[in-house]
Image 1 (cartoon, one colour):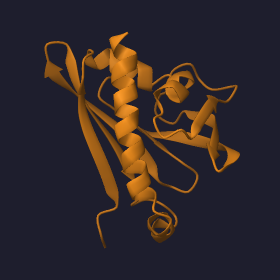
Image 2: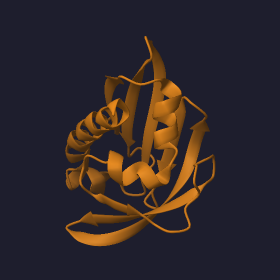
Image 3: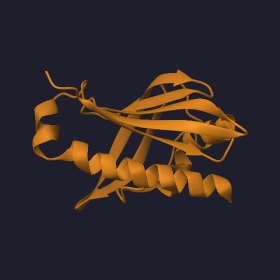
Length: 145
């Protein structure tokens, strides 16, 4: 079986906890998203994510749709991951990079997806890698202001 996860890492000019706090706030996800697919946070989301928390987003990939996510990994300040209804995961890992900077790794993991071959045939790994790069750039820009 081929590796079914792609990751991009970037060092951002902000402390680790500040980065994590932004990621743990679902209302901020549309501001962070570089793929252009996350449009708005749904009402009723928790203010801060935690293990097992559920949150919804208004999305658009050609056509608008709604998605509900569940936080499946959570270590405050260092790791957060959520799963879509098809089983694939978005994971964020944070490490101190010294001088108030943070090494941020975002991973798209479709090894747990219900139909991993479908994700591959539709070209999502490559598309998502481009989106991850743009997201990390946006994250860095938001934290610098």
